[in-house]
Structures are given as structure tokens and as C-alpha cells.
Length: 321
Ligand code: DGY
Image 1: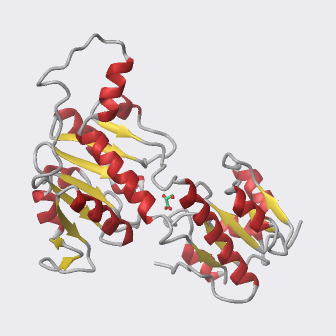
Image 2: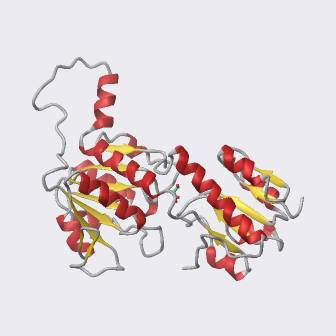
Image 3: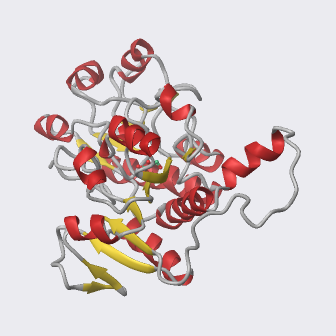
């Protein structure tokens, strides 16, 4: 087929309905990630491609799509699955879905903070194990969030600020690092610090930056060593931002009290060592998985398709970095 709208994964019901109103034949992949072979075959000749973070969009993909392709619309705010520079070199626009998933992602980040500090997942596993138990003053004791516990938010963009608001509602002290701001600035009640100062002062460090060459392994062995003993690391951004081997070593040694991960370096592969550690909460990349949020993400991707088909700019274009 040529001049079709290729959709790699089944979208929300409302978005699937909308896709058929855009005036192009629609080729839909499958609910599971398509094989690379199937992806390259189905995208051939497409005018626009709606993809998710499980599809790698690179020179091979763009070659397979061919010269009709005008837009790659990612159903995610992160776009490290796409070689944006290569797309733009070929005149193919790229869009993402910023702004519509901030609250859902911040909610889930906070759920992970609570789950790891108050040992929710661990205690659930304990009850399910059938181990006899009786209430005790030292049982499953975790970290109090209120009363000055310091949350360090790395990346004070939309999602980082939404996480900060939730932490403030829990009476936490919120510290921030973002290269856009100077240490000493205050942003929405967040005291901005240098990265070394944030790492040294925070009880919990949560990352909310895109995965870029500059942010790969931002939380590495040295960063972890500079953190407080007994601190926590939270990652609902992208797997490569935290050096998983260094994290595992710090959890095993007790340097870190815990971690909560929604994303993984080799996703969807999860390092088997992580599965053995009680103090880590593991999630299958679901931070944005509110039903209304997922619908908004899918519809925004299609809004971008509609604009490009009408010879206008995408609503939410991404720029090569
Ligand atoms: C994103 O949007 O980048 C998330 O990781 C998936 O919602």
C-alpha cells in the first residue's frame, strides 16, 4: 500500500475512530510491538507514521518508509527512540506528546515514592507469602515523608514541577536541579541547587529529564556515592539515566535504602539482579497509564498527523538536539 497512515500499535478506542476520519487508508500494526520485519514492511509507502517508544525510527526505518513520509508522530513525550536529526535531514517532521501526561506521570512517580519509602510492595509480598505476623512497633518501618524530608527533583520541567507540587502537599522540602536555572533561584517554591549539592542534600532523588547523551548515566556510581547514606532513587523517566549496575551495587551494600524504577536500561528486559532485591519497586513503564491520559496522548499524535496532512506545522513538533 502507498500513501497510507501507518499506526504501529493499537491506540485508544477514540483515537482509532479518529484515525479513520483523517482521509487516508489506515494500516494498523498490532497490540504487541511489531517485529522489525513487519514494521518495515507495513510502513513502506506511508504518508505518516504513528509510532510508540517501542519502535526504533532510524535511517533503516526511514529508508523503508520511502519518500512519501511526511511525519513521524510519537505517542510519548520522550523521543529517544527516534533519530530526529536523520528524519529532519530527509524533510520528515517529528512530533511527540508533551503536556498531556504530566499529572499522570507525577501521580505515578509519587505512588512509587510512597511505595518504596513506606515499603508498600514489600509488605504486600510479605502478607501474600502467608508468613505468620502480628502488629509490632518495629515492623515494616519506613521513611516519613512529611516533616522536612528532602525530595531532590532533577529536571524542573512540566513533569518535575508536577512531582514537586505533590511533594509540597506532603509537607516535604523540595530541592531542584535544572541547567535552565541558577543555584539559589526559586521555581514554584522549589529551591534550585547545583547537581552536586542536590545529590548531597536529598533524602530522595527523582529524575525527570529526557535521555540524551548528556543525561546517560547521570546517576552513576560517583553520583550515588555523593548521596546521603540511606537515600532513595526514583526513575520514571528513561532507563539509561540511571546506571543500573551502580544502583544494584548501592542497594546491595545498603548505601541506598531503596529505589523505584518504572524504566530500565535494557527495557523490556529487567536485570535479574533487580528481581532479587526487596528494597526496589519495579514497574513496567506505566507512569503515564491513566486511561484519560493515554487517550489524550493518542489523540494528540493524530492531531499532529491532521496538521501535517493539511500542510501545516505539527501541533507539538520536536527539534533535533
Ligand atoms: C513518555 O511519554 O515518554 C513515557 O515514557 C510514556 O508515556
